[in-house]
Amino acid sequence: MKTDTHVVNIGGIEVGGSNPIVIQSMTDTDTSDIINTVSQIEELYNAGSQIVRVTVNNTAAAKAIEEIKIRLSDKDIYVPIVGDFHFIGHKILRDVPKCAELLDKYRINPGNLGKGNRKDENFKTFIDIAKDLDKPVRIGVNAGSLDQELLNIKMDEYSGNKTSQEIESDALVSSALISYDKALDYGLKEDKIIVSCKVSRLNQMVECYREISKSIKAPLHLGLTEAGLGIKSIVSTTAALSILLHEGIGDTIRSSLTPELNAKRSAEVELCKEILQSLSIRNFKAEVTACPGCGRTTSNYFRELTGEIKHYLDKKNKEWIKKYPGSENLKVAVMGCVVNGPGESKAANIGISLPGSGENPVAPVYIDGEKIKLLSGSNIADDFIKLVDEYVLNKWGK
Image (tube, rainbow, N blue to C red; front, side, top):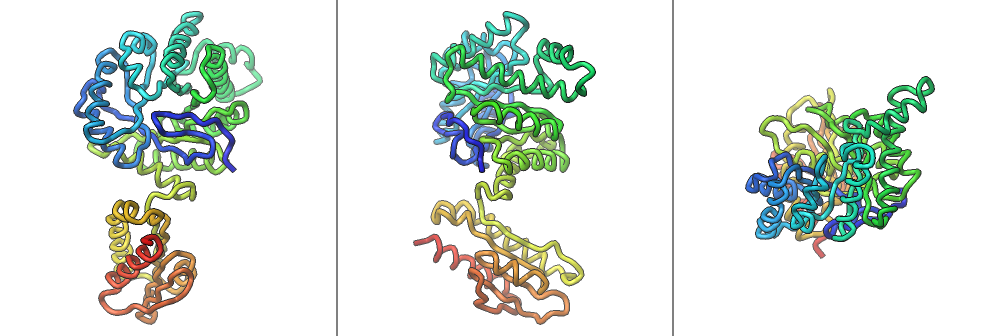
């Protein structure tokens, strides 16, 4: 069961409570480069990002926000834009009021707002601006930029009794909770605050979020600080987010992948969608179940047919979702032999169990658990695709 949290509205997207888990992303362009920033926001939005964060690290970036929003509007793209602030963010918001007005949320890092009284004053400036403009904030604590004063206090308090990682975790959680309480003390309402506590180490990140979720009802933004490159980044992100989401913790997610050279930034969005769909939390497209192959599927036919059907479903996905709402829940099974083929095919909405090596060269098709037809010959793929089309039309086209 999902943890009970407050609902925070971010530019029309509701995060928390019983709302679906929200996917967000972040650009890696120079925000003052308006053309490339708009192009990347469009890419992320089209991939399924519901909220997009941009870096606002100087006055030029802040002044670009207005034109970015205009150009997105011209493209009929109304995705909430979050400003990512560090170090002098409070000054930027104060000096460029149009930026403060147009952004849909501010991300604040308590670890780099200064020291001593100045830190509290700068944080209050952020909160006062958010309060005056009725904007939500994310209090985003990161291990890599943790409040060193707080960390030193924790080290003195627990020296010899806890490991360095345990002390760091305690400081991370404390920083998030202290900042949350201060924001409330400064007058920001509960329904304007989201919290995150990001670490690159998977187990540590999971424990920090578990502790925070026990203490406050703020919606939680999940993610590793840096997931890294390649398959390692995919595995780490999937494992970390899946553990917490399975426990009902988390209201919005981001995959902080380091993109390969010339790769699409939207890969991080696609990963989030796959994680949510794999956990049966949200569905975004028809899903294909296919066996991994074995000695019974030694020909290339099974692999070719599976790829052909998946390619067709991916191609039709956007059209079907628009014309046939609910078709994103379609489950298709393409199985390679008699061992698991019939069982998996029966469990899907529609499934086909191909003949394995040495089996009778016919492929039974199952619809909603019932065997309805045997396919054979050289046109099995086309014949099966026609049956899938008919199923979608009959089930969701009415």
